[in-house]
Length: 538
Image 1 (cartoon, rainbow, N blue to C red):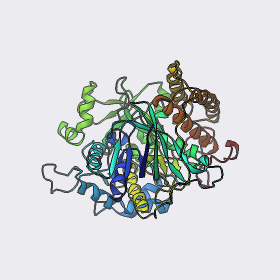
Image 2: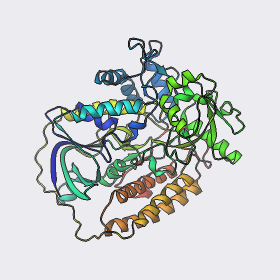
Image 3: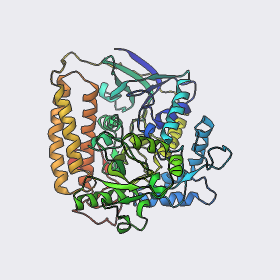
Image 4: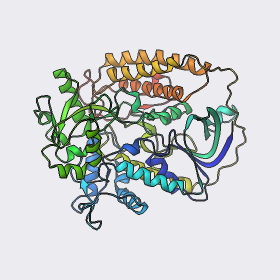
């Protein structure tokens, strides 16, 4: 085991983690951890773009109002304004970094930037790099991070738990976070990463569901670790389901970008009849919760496994210019976006709740920050508006970096961090237990805590997760840890938080829709869970 000492420990290498690392003062020694390769993560697969007011006919107030409307009464208006007002600066920073966004004439770099419109937006304000915006951002930022002498990159390292001072020193009331225990996956070794400032940029937990648009690493690690360390968690019942993921047994998690609907794509029943006009006057451009619920309703009503998305009325030249990656990937699965409707289903896409932070990304615990999807800033409320997520990553990463840069030097630690103790555990000969529990968890979350919920389903899920938590904790205490075990442990914790949050909300609002309470309450309030109170008191 090794002890690494840094000024700042950044756990996660998506847009939030990379941006924050680049914004830190060059005098600070930074450790940047990635669960997989540096580029892997949700940012890499983001297709749509970044919402920002760049059109003279658009306005800050319009973007703010659209976000508040999509959030269904639970957005923090101060946070929304802060984020929207910082959007153009964030975009300018990416352009200066070398990110190549699409122009109205891609053969003329002096032509205006091309803006598209997505669900919930009243104007064209989504800047993009064709249909692979996340790839352009992630690869550009990763190259810059790799060139920084003050940043050390650790790939294939997964955090086990945060290290809290008062848990090591019974006489101390200081809840300061001092770093984390980290598993080096390839070597199966546990190391201590000690730092004055620790940043969670670990993304969301959509892998808790059977069907998701997210890569395999989206297992809610930061949310679970922060909860175990003592942070409050908010609004975990609001899980966004993207309406249009490709329905194909080999596609796994291929999302068909919302921009397809923004450019006129029509959702269709199996007989190719449009149906969104029956659910919302905005039709395909309604917010994602409405569209996903409409698709789910029609699939259950008709007893079918998927519906269709049609853009074939556009010219092949238009489709290939605007959606080259989507068109190419669809062809690899045997579909032609230019000539036929594409089979689609909703899939878990974004975690709107998370670790409670302020405008600088600070959590309840001294020295701990959370940025990006792992955090609950108050921006998204009950439903995230399309393309506000990458914007949140950029804006709050900059705010958190500014806070760290201006922080006074912390006093030296007076307590020694003990080594990771494996003296009473053995190698497991029952790894199948982990894979079985993983499958069971994701399936009952999909069946009981999905797009449409009932109290009976949630109570059934709660009984399942309590039993599963008991099995996982017993396994964790007896066997050496592995990447799969850590992710299962974290997913189970995230599932428990989602279920308890959903049971507390006695109304239907935004992404939380329950048949037992179909009406919206007259009072809008956040669901806040605190680890220092029993579930019955939360």
